[in-house]
Image (cartoon, rainbow, N blue to C red; front, top):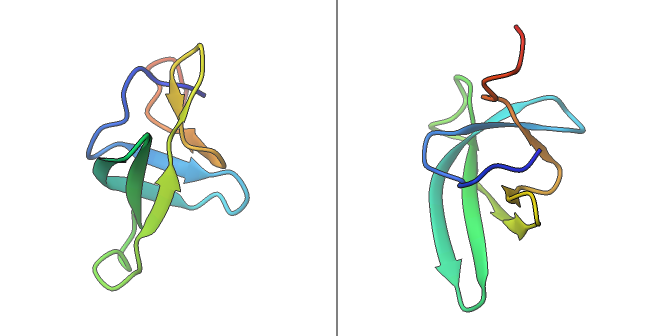
Length: 76
């Protein structure tokens, strides 16, 4: 699912494992934009960060292989 902006503190779920990740940094590098992700659980302080290239679509921005979990329409 695409969003208008990828921001610090957003939580994204990995599609393959179902694990949640927190966006800790968003930055530009030449012509690309990247997000740094850490697991959103107790292992976060010692876990390695993941660098994911942000994809731009007509609907907005997305992280390939991840689903935005904080959709206001999502039911819990």
